[in-house]
Length: 330
Image (cartoon, rainbow, N blue to C red; front, side):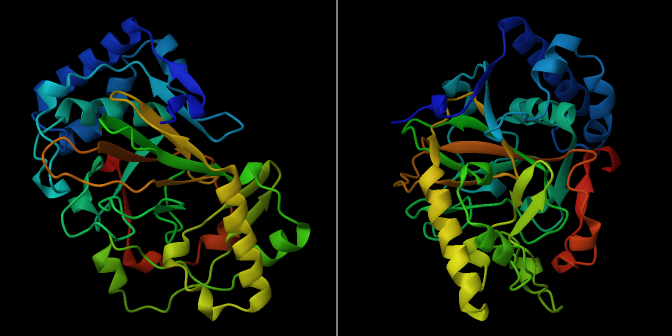
């Protein structure tokens, strides 16, 4: 299987790993839980205790690919316990790594959460769940998780997405494709920067799916000084409502993203950092065993100050009633 070498790798040295995990353990011991409001409020102060070299190693994504793998964290598979069958049954399993991921996220920006997803937690657990095999969410398994922008339906979506691998015995690949590597015509770009159809909330947001407001058409592509960015989730985009020139351009975008897609098979301790404005991500199909050994990721979402300054395009959107929570205000 392809490995994380499909993406640029940043290697943490042993001293930096010790520094990071020691601080995480101290915070967990002090506050008792990775979901503690006091711990979340303490993150920014705690990060100032980390050394300059580690801060540099954990700077936000800055590669042309729009992603990299942070490598070097060490996990003991036997200490993790079994892979949960659903995110709601995780409890304190892997809590130390929740705090590690929150610290990494806090050095890159501001961690965010959503009231309507996984009970407002700032770290989500991505595990295959019985009965969800064919849905287009992280709980699926037997179908391709279509490449998409995380929380594409919302104007306040994250700038960065972090996926920390807890367990991946079967080398199941996450997929990633950068809009900056595609070849689209000027006409395709012109079509896809139009506001034609909305992106609807995905199945992880049941409350948002019941929102009574009128769906708002949004652009798929944005042309900026530093290149194209995108907002893309074909599984939740009602393309049948669009005109044929737009649909044809959208199909060519799908084909191009498929052409430049790379598989990234994470190992335990790897953290995949994705620029959510530039790269779409997904996952290849697999057969879940539900025996405690299945793939298990932890996910964090991060906003970066000064990013995505296009209020004229998105500020008026209702976000289907969903509001993001910021760690510092938790």
